[in-house]
Length: 117
Image (spheres, rainbow, N blue to C red):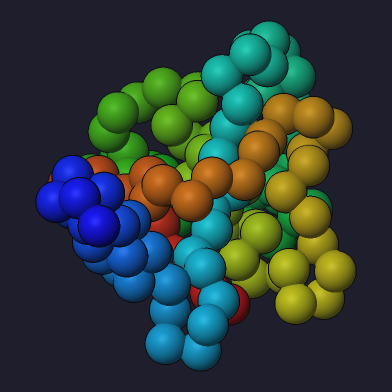
């Protein structure tokens, strides 16, 4: 086996083992789709933080997820909070096509996005 192929396999194994949880499940997060128009994104965010039951308290001023203060960033946090809380009850990461699943952790600085399996 060539050293380049061995190196590639080791890198793939490393990243797979990092992303995989101990119970064999991969972590996933629900984030806002960048292509969603702002009006639709705002309606989905309002629903998630209202009737949806997401905990949006970390999005308030002086809280860890307030910055960046953008619609997309706030929607991503709210969508993920809702999805992680209720996916075991059948909730999806859909939000009328405003969201999508990612395997890349969207957490940043002091804003931590949960991932529950």
